[in-house]
Length: 99
Image (tube, rainbow, N blue to C red; front, side):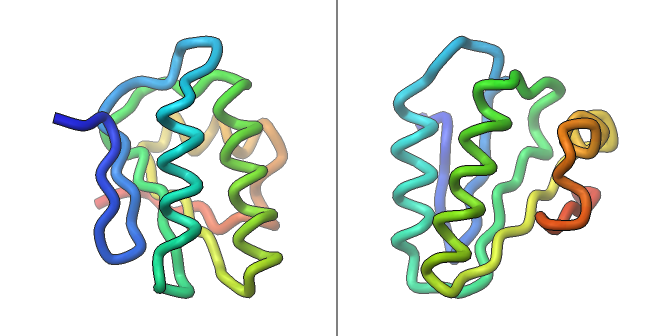
């Protein structure tokens, strides 16, 4: 089973992002950007922590999406959304509480 699943412009993350660097997350973000959908989502609902390395990778994915004429929304738990707000994401990346 893969740690990342991409379907219909939504990337679901199935593991906590604590490691210093995970090339498979970077590759999954690149794969998401290649999806034909214009409205992309990174679904972090299944995780409880996001390290600064991954915060930077999410930001880079957002800017790449913007340069391609696409939007990016982050769906997650309130705890992870708070981490992203503290990192300054609110106001430029759409943050949404996961269902």
